[in-house]
Image (cartoon, rainbow, N blue to C red):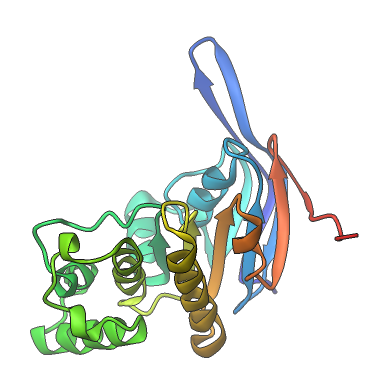
Length: 228
C-alpha cells in the first residue's frame, strides 16, 4: 500500500465568470520514503496538488488517503492535528518571522504539542544541527543569507519529525549555489532520515534530485517523457 494515494481527484475554482480546473481526474501513488518531484509550467496546478496532499485544501471529487487517514472526509480539526504531526511544509519563500531568531522560528511549531521547554530545546537543537545552522541559532532572518533562511525554514518543517515533507518551489528565490545546497539538504533528509519528500518545481535542475518525476500540465498528470 502506498503512503499517499489520490484517486480520480478533481479540483476547480471559480474565477469571475469562468471555472478553472487546476486538477482533472488525477490518480497518483507516492511510496513511503520516496523523493517524488512534480514538474510543470507555472499555473499548471502543482501547488494545488501539494496543498491537497498536505490537507490545506480539499478536492471537489475523488479521494485522497495518506497513511490510514482519508483526507477528504476528515473534520477540519482532525486534519489540523494530523497536519501538524505528519506534514512539514517548505514554501518558496522562507516566511520566517522577522523579529524572531532562527531558534525561535524553528521552535514555533512545537508549541502546538504542549512539550516542555527542555524537550523543545532538544528538538530545535537537533533540527538546526541537521540543516547545518547550529551556530546561527541566535541570528535574526535579516542577518542570514537567502540560502540560510531557507535552511531555517526546512529546520522548522522537520522539527516535529513529520513523516512527509512537501516543498513548493523551495529554490525559486535562490541563487544557483544556495539552491544546490537546499536541494542537497532535502536529498539528505530523504536518504538518511527516510523522509517522504513531495516537491514541485519548474526547474529541471531541481527535478533531477528526485527518485521519480511526473509532469502536471493543464490539470493532467502524466509520466515524464524519457530523455533522448
